[in-house]
Image (cartoon, rainbow, N blue to C red):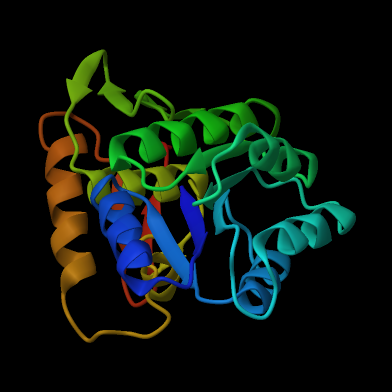
Length: 225
């Protein structure tokens, strides 16, 4: 998933980003309400995590603006204001869930994943299949010919992106931006290393390779002719 965290407390935003990244998600951070609104309007996210008290524009105003734009992305509100009345106000402003501070990261992750499941059911395909390779995005299970393939979070994200773009050439820039959240080339072999590891897991023990290198262009996951 791609998640936007709108939080002006850098310690909190780093804590959330680190945990979500370790869980295999791509995370962007905005430190003000105006920046969060601009990013929410210009880019596609699966879930937003929005602090209620923000500089320049408060979180509820941000959410209301997105809803007026007919942006249906699920929003989890974070707030030090945890009374019933505060929660009701947040939900009526367009929030989908409300988590008082301080919070346990495990609970935040569970709430984010629950919001994503709810959104996926009507918007994004969660059962992916290329030839005999199958992925369940919600349970995070991958199988080929009925055999379970165990992937690390980044490998799972890489394979999901390749499967969603099967039969298409996926460039290095596309992978950097959508799997690693880099908007520049770090000039490392990180993609080559992860593609090699992924290929060894999904192709090595099977007769027909699915993950192909397109020389000079990128990679392609495709069914055999």
